Length: 384
Ligand SMILES: [Zn+2]
Image (cartoon, rainbow, N blue to C red):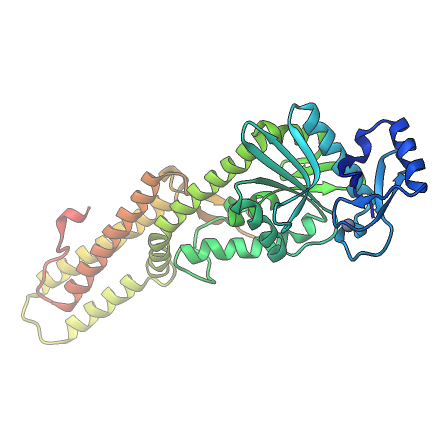
């Protein structure tokens, strides 16, 4: 309904750029037969001034052009971005078409080889359409920024793809890794989309003409546009993504050990499986024919029992706050605090991996000792 750009006498005119007098003069000449061609689609157009005083063009006929559906808010925001970019010294266009006309961007700004596009999206857009449209910019080396209204409502669409992304990489599609606090990977929608798809965006409140992000509920349009032009917004997205990717790499690295750790919790603490097994073997060895004397046998089971106590102690030490590897956190919605791996450094991950190796070797020697009545225990003295 309301584009800013038209072609008159072979010349591109940006409505708000010309003076009020020139505009009035054009309007008179247009009424007297001077043709106006819409910049968006080439259909015939007319001149008009919005309530806020913005000089613009509108389609004379229903041309099936998507600009016909553009709202008043869209026009105002587009024009403001255009003016901000200009005042910051960027060469700027509105409704800028691709050479092959596969896209027309709301605002296109150029400086020192850096090409930036701003797209205002007031109506709902599906993640797949957004991605498809953004890929066209990515393919041409254009930095695109999407101002998305109804942004939070769409977070879920992006977040679901994003979660699958983590757990798939960690080798457990559809399953969560134990001892991982999901909130480590939670961030706002603009980060979700950037991490998952490389798409730059911000939330838009079209009525107020302000933007919002994860950490900032209200950013004036001009402030945000200037941050984009300075490259700060891109840096913010990249830094958040780098932090996220670092955590994700640690998670992928730690996942097998954490899964094993949960198995040991089951065996050591929850079901006391080693104690039970050792007790059963001891009872059996007392009742069956023995090749070793009673004293040696009792000594062996004392050793095993001491080893099991040692294992339990090691386990409890590891999950205590003092080990620095885990923390107990109260998560809203859960009655008791949960145990979470800190996931802070590679050396922490190595520590848990080493402990898992020690536990595994212990378990093997335990099984061997029980399997062979005459065998000394522990088999591997170095494991402590
Ligand atoms: Zn059009």
